Length: 78
Image (cartoon, rainbow, N blue to C red; front, side, top):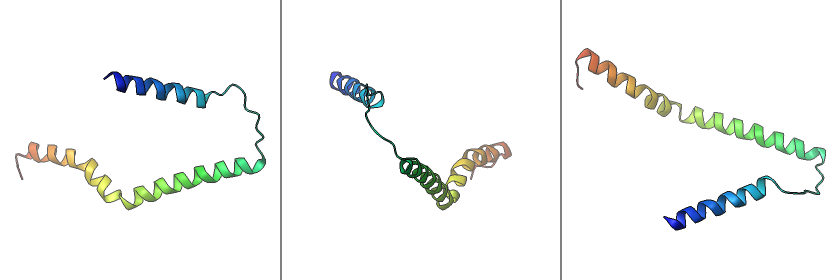
């Protein structure tokens, strides 16, 4: 328990230090914006492809609670 709490605190401190650096003497050239845009588009297209591939499973998963409720209302237990 203590070790888990210690690891959580260490993780949060490291995340805070990385998220809010004091000074960053860096130059962002125009290519950096293009690269970030490409990564965002790639992530969106990858998510769309994953949804397309697994659409039948997603639809079945979301429809299953409603179909069970419908069967119980009809009085059938399949």
